[in-house]
Image (cartoon, rainbow, N blue to C red; front, side, top):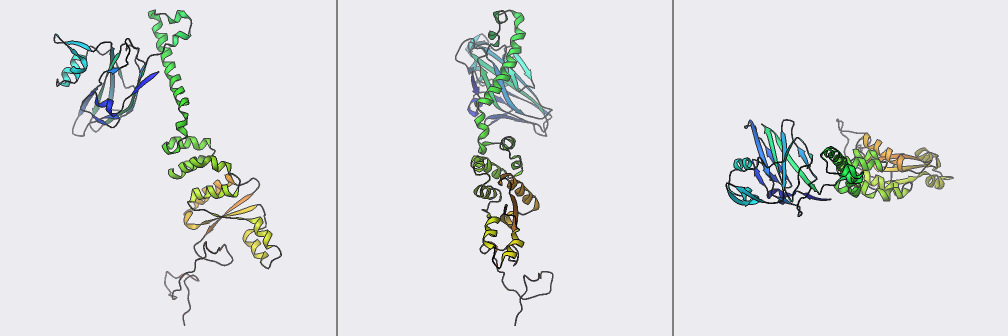
Length: 374
């Protein structure tokens, strides 16, 4: 099946009355000063290149308020030559002439084969001919705006009755209902097949909407990323294959924590600490600081990257998902100053404050800002 998708160039080939073309859509705005307004768009001829073409379907995306009414009329013909006031001329030339829109609408009134209201998906049952014309009328009231985009016309019409016994494929007038019913079924099947054929579009994170990110996050068993910033969620989806390859490893945990916080973490594995501390004078201090469970590991994250408890809780859930089986993870939030006997690492949070004179006021913190002067 072929189709024609209206872009800005195709829209501009038609005739606009009280509406504007903006990129790939037509927009009609009724200001607060106007009680109501009727905007009209008449297309140029859409050439299928084949006589007696059976046009199939027209669909579009409509953004409007409930008070706006949109109607679509159409007709198809095999010839563009029309007799107007006893003169023969091409319909295309007539529509592009300087004649007023009211006269053009009056002349075309009897040509429209059918008018559909308030529908964004229309089956063009009566349309038969090489050339197709359509008209969009927008009736709106004060303060309303209507936008129509992604207009697509499909052709030729597929006869689903040919898959049934020959009796049902006859041209008998009683079979028209069956053919219309099968056409509705076919459009549903066609839309589904189009989504299946283009499913790869759903796996391109950079082009995804928030809704698609949520869908893909569920597929990746990471539904919580929908609460992340979009840039972080997209980056996770881009690296998901590699992250799951490294799942359960020190490198994998480092990668996912860096992705979430924006800073590569320090990871301390308890078995290494205990292995080197046994029999040393500092064995007791090490056990107080890290515990005695050799299956525990610590992820050291600077305080500035975990601003509140919600981020701490989210990071904890991520670690539980990516940590090795039968292990326990602990998050250590490194404060930007040293406290001996707690988690203090040279080059990480080994910050020495400048000495300041002791002042007894509401900004004094003991012992961090205390200095004894001679």
